[in-house]
Structure formats: C-alpha cells, structure tokens
Length: 168
Image (cartoon, rainbow, N blue to C red; front, side, top):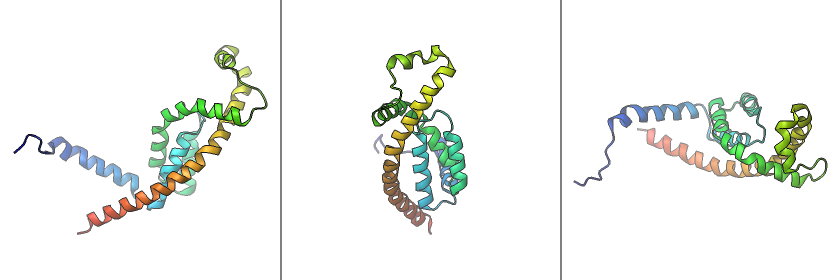
C-alpha cells in the first residue's frame, strides 16, 4: 500500500458531504434545467450591474416575477459584489466613451466629490451612473445570452447524469 491512498475523513463523510448535498438539493429543487440556467445568468448579469444600490431589490422582483429561485439568484448577486465594484470604473469609462457629450468628468472632479457635498455631487453621480448603465446594457446582455446558451447545455447534461446515477 502506498501512502497516497485516498481516504475519506470522518468529518467530511459525516458532515460536509451531507451538507453539500442538502445545499445542492435546496438550490436546484423544483427547477428545470432551463430555469436554473436562467437564474444563474440573471444573477450574474445583475451582480455586475453598475449600481451600488438596488440590485438586491431588482433580484427579488425578478425572482418573484419570473418564478426563479430566490436563494440562487441572490447568492450569485452577492458573490459577484467584488466584481461589481471592480467593473464600476470600466463601465463608467466605457459610458463616457459612448456618450461624450454633457458634462465631462475629470479625475480632479472625482476626487473632489467627497469635499463638495452631496447636493452638488448628485447630478454628476447620476449622469455617471446613467453612462455606466448604458455601457452595461450594451455589453452584459450579449455576454449573458452567450453564457446562458453554454450553461443550459451543461446543466442539462449534469441533470441527466445525476438522474441516471440516482436510478436503481
């Protein structure tokens, strides 16, 4: 016998595996492969939406409206929060390139936003958010549709595999 044999620890066997199976069951229960893929893709698209506020409410409304899994949708949305913050500036820059008119934003203006007060910064932030949302609207839905089509095939294969494994 070699020292590299695969042994399952009692902790993993008694606690982690049942917990993983239960989480997987809760996340996918009652969802057809198409709905699961839709939920994951919508959660991903909304997870990078360049709004610092409101994505949770939008996810809640969409999950209710289209009967998607709330747990999966919100989980994907929350998991992508760091990505949302990382993409905020690139979306703003792309928005500024797409809509070059109206107030241009200089780096000095961005650094002075905290000193000028909310009332004077609000119109500029609103305009930046609009431009970032336009950039998101042009890029993310196309990417989301592509990922959805790839994910749908993967989820269907995964479901078929899990169904054949559970049959006696």
